[in-house]
Image (tube, rainbow, N blue to C red; front, side):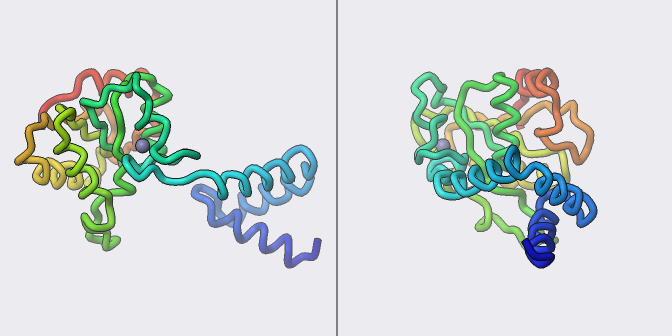
Length: 197
Ligand SMILES: [Zn+2]
């Protein structure tokens, strides 16, 4: 391995969320020291996941099958759709095991600052799904951030003409909090205490 290879590894690691150049260097050194036990298995896992994981065309979840295993699970309640910003929010709700319906992953939030409008998010897909006769409730679980709230308001307007109840998670959540940071108990309580918008 040349110095260039090491630098390239550090540069790529530094692109990961939460890793700056300094922690990327530490991570690279750690990987190089644990070549057999960590670096090679990690490389194989990355290649495998890159080849097999895809986005569910119905809900936006990530899985190796499309539609995803949540969308096709007959034990999940098809009447309730929980709208989340990203897949890690879905993971957080699944970890809490508090929700037994289905999901819709928007892929982000509306943000004028970042130039993200409704077309950049899967809102059209949500409206189509919410119009299906079996769907009776749409739970908005976007974050308590300004963008999350704006997105929830926008979706509420878009769903206004449909025969579905639109509810919002009762966030006992600090502003700017994301679902993924909530402990399971808080998340379960927020889901139970959801209210109409
Ligand atoms: Zn799905």
